[in-house]
Length: 379
Image (tube, rainbow, N blue to C red; front, side, top):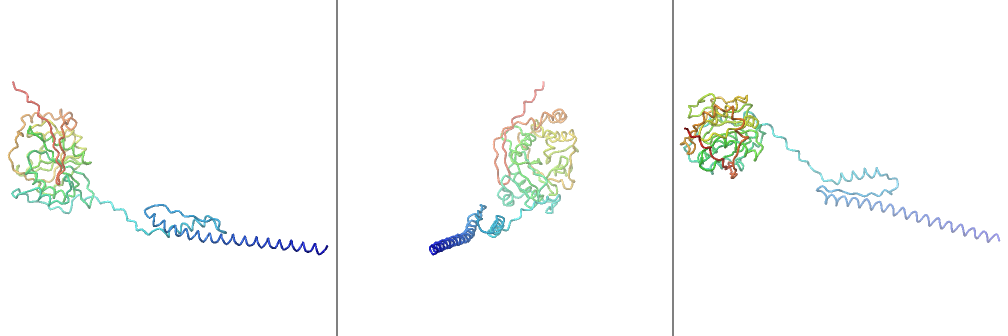
C-alpha cells in the first residue's frame, strides 16, 4: 500500500516537472520570436525610410512604424529615435536666400552726360533705333534693373502724320530716359481722320488709356518735334506741375512769356486730377497750354521749371500741319478758364478707341475724337 502511494506521488511529480519544462520552452520560444520581430521591424523601418526618401524628395510624407511591445521601451524613446532617423535620411539642401530688395534709384544718376549734340541731318530708320535700344521691351517699356525708381512714368505724345519726327524722337529720347534710370513707357496717341487737330484732348485720351496698360503715377506730355539738349533735365514728376521745355531754339533759348506751359510738361496723377485734366474744346493750334497754366494756378499750385541752362530744346523744323490752323476762339476761351475747367476736362472726355498696337519702341493708340462744333455765324 505504501509503495503504491509512493509510486503515484512520483508520477505526479514527474508530470509537474514535465509541465514546467513545457511551459519554460514555450516562454523561451515567445521571447525568441519577439526579439526576432524587433530586429526585423528595425530593418524594415530603415529600408522604408531609404525608399521613402527616394520617392518623396519632392515634399511627400515619410511614415515609420515602431513595435512598442519591446521590453523596457517607452513611446518617448521611439519618438526620439524616429526623429533622429528622419533627420539622418533627409537630403542635405542649401536653401537659396531670397533676393535683396533693390535700392532706390539716385536722384542724380551717375551716368548722365549733360549737354548733348542734337542734329537731324543724318538718315534715321526704326531698325537703327531698335538696334540702339536692345533693353527696351515691347510697347516702348523700360525699367532699370539695378534700382527702384520713385515714379512710374507714362510719356504721352499727341500725333498725326509725323512718322519721320517720331524716328528722331525715339532715337534721342530712349537713351536719355534709360540714363535717367526711369521706369517708363512711350505712348503715341494717334488722331485718325483729317478733321481739325485737338492736342489737349489727345493728351486726355493718353492719360486714360495708359492707365489701362499699367499703374502709372506720373505723366509727361511731349510734342513729337521737341528734343531735350541736356539729359540732366529729368523726366519725372515733382512736388509741383513741371514745365520742361523752357528754352527752345525757336524762341532764342528763352521763355517767351511767364505763363508759357507748352511743348513738354509733366504732372503727377494727383495734380492732373486736381485740375480736371486738360480742356477738350481747343480745336486747332494754340491756347490749350495757356488754359492748362491757368488751371494750375487757379487750383493753388505753381509751375516748377529746371534751370534755363538745362531746360534747352531743339525743334525739328517743319511746315504747319494741315487742319491745325490757329484757333481764332482761343483768346476768349483762355479768359474763361475759371468758369469752364470744372465741366470741361477729363470728367467730360468722350472718344472712340479704334486700335492699340504695341511696337518694339512704343505703343500706338489710334482714336477718333470727333469734330469741332460749328462756329457761330457773325451777323
